[in-house]
Image 1 (cartoon, protein in one colour):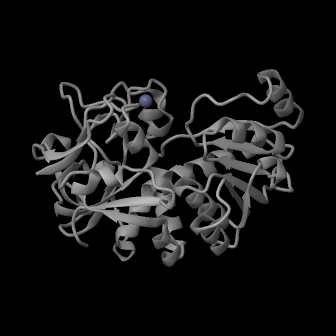
Image 2 (cartoon, rainbow, N blue to C red):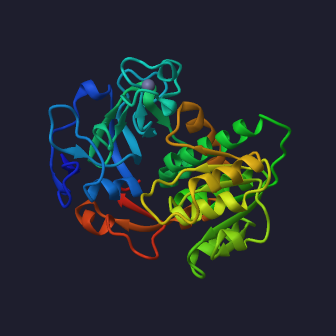
Length: 348
Ligand SMILES: [Zn+2]
């Protein structure tokens, strides 16, 4: 079969090439790829900044946001041939740590977890892939390829759950949510927060185009420029840029008792003030800055509920570019008008 593969930590090594069929030890369910979406992590892996091949192998099949069609349900009792399916990205560590032992592999403490297409297990950008029944998620057939947004929706579902969990430390009724960054994660965070009935604001660098349109279509308010100029003190901020100055401004602008959830991963950036100044701002307003990564089964379930309630036309507008797998180089380019790029392996 053909697969989009990479030699992790070596830039420029992505290929669309002949690759061995998926090993039955990787899961009894055999799946035909329909689509796989590209995310920032895939680009970082392609740029040689991240990623691990399976033990004893040099190349990793990319891709962790996917929709597939079941060819053989194997040992699954809930799937049948033809069903649409996604694979849960992270698998628990083998020790396991206490969190993995109770199914909270998103909170893994020892770092020995594995992730499809990222860390030590092959991803879903191959013509066929396999998954174990316990990590297979049956998808809503009426959503079709829009299901490719389920995995990023699990990330924001967990992030908002973290915000609410932290908020229970005191009396707190958050009304306003500011999302920084209007990429796929930011827009999906805005979607889920508005489905929760919050007053949603989204801030991004761009001033015109699809991003402001999509924000307004949710009934949310769009801002560009500095977080310091949004004109209110948000109860919660979901930070999706990973940009140092945006994070620094978020800590200044958050309301008293507010929660900032960091979901973006950046590096460097000029510090606007000292760490002690930030600490003082956080102390004096009882703020919490919480990091959030990945998702567990509960978040996959809740994310599917959110997608089911979302406007399908709006979801479809997030998928801004479709590429064939042989055009993987184009698919892995960052273009200004991209929100979500989808690689189409087969027709639905
Ligand atoms: Zn663990």
